[in-house]
Image 1 (tube, helix red, strand yellow):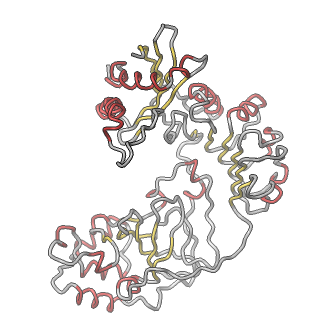
Image 2 (image 1 turned 60 degrees about the horizontal axis):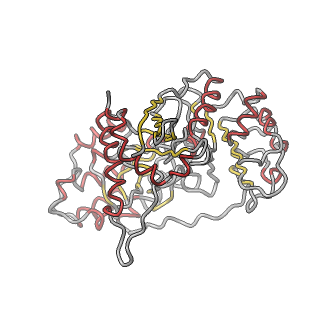
Image 3 (image 1 turned 180 degrees about the vertical axis):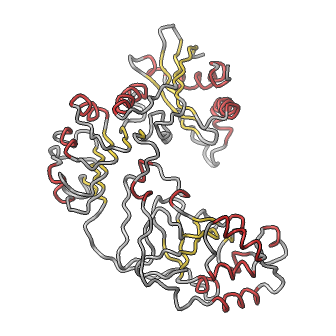
Length: 456
């Protein structure tokens, strides 16, 4: 038996959880849940503030680290990406029942919770922004500042002893990428070393170029697949590039050639698929915290490296009806205010008035995402009228109404259940998720192991 499925592996954590939540676990239906992965975990243990005058130390939470560490070691032995758990009291005095929930191909993992993440209702389906390719921009040309010879000459002056990459190394990189290196980027690597180890006796590349330069072996194409965008985030975004934009606001593009990093996780790329007001070969940054879009750094690599331009150009603000609309008590005042033919995403949050009808968005040709908080819809069954939905996220009660009425839209690609982390028992949410999965002939969440033990 795997040590992950041995109650002894979990015993130290069970003791801590039971001590912290004795009242909850003794109440009818009481439970505690969490999630543990090889590199992070979320367990419901109280935070112990550090003593006055010093920072928090690992030793302040040593018992938790040691208890979770046993489970992480078991995960590594199994080659597992993680496990969720639900702890309940058993009928045996002082006993507990532990439910282990392992990853399932029909569900994206939840984030820091034992509740199931997004339900995947079609094989290989991706959120619409992830599917988007760049639009052609007829007439796009390099910026006037792009000057391959000036760039090459400047780099040689700054690095007189450098030995650049060979033509064979550059050709191998182009074959790996499936696209020729842009002229300026090719010139850069013809002068600067193409490997980390060759920089030892030279100047810091950040001072020379303005970024942490990648070796040729790590240059890559930042297409949509390079950004790991979960459904629950990707479905809430919309690709919107106006005529005033220099960069197409995509998840990724086959024309974004990443060559460096800003030192904080944001990537720098040469852009071969610019926006309507951009230039072929402009330099952009791709933020590591966002799911979509990129920003302009410089009109050309020459502009950045030779002239030290890093701030892009001002983009005029143009007011348009939002493609992503948030209806709540502080944003849009109702669904009527959100409705227009281009609307793609409708999110209904905290609402302090009478529940809303979805009638204003019936028939909208591009509405593909609906998220609604508990009690915000006057008639959840109106959702059946939204025939183009790809993603739907609702609380359990609203899903229950749709299931009982046979009103779940048939064209969904993914679905989410909005559950409260500790109030809603993940086992009940999993049962509801399995009903939704069954409608789409998807495999149920079945990898649940039940272990019995004692709390002390």
